[in-house]
Length: 184
Image 1 (cartoon, rainbow, N blue to C red):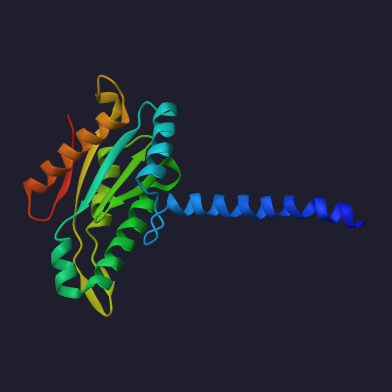
Image 2 (image 1 turned 135 degrees about the vertical axis):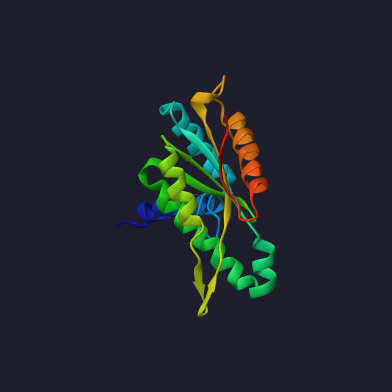
């Protein structure tokens, strides 16, 4: 290879490396560093796509119950372990038919292609399983609100999130250890 050809390849190599780094940074910005779930921006884009393709989709909001108490009693590392466990359980429940995300703090979100009450009961049971951390069994609980897009007059993600949020607070208000509420 002559010197002129090599000199012309150097900028191309630089642009390729730069493009790769930018792609990695963008991908990292759309993932929560603790749980590896999608952040709000990354989740929203994927959720909008799934909703367009599946009119029977449902949107869920999940909020951990008594998270501050867990953090204050067992430490922030235990709280982080609870967040990771919750993310893993939500991701597994969504499987290949949905997308999970972390909105921040102890709030999670999901959209799935279709959902039954049995599916939601299974999710609630999974989110209420205790977590073994540092040899101690930590109680976990979550309130889950769900909204089926087919029940909305206009199946928009923002409206589904608002309805799921109201349903989640209704579930939280019904009992001290959360549970499930589906918007009607």
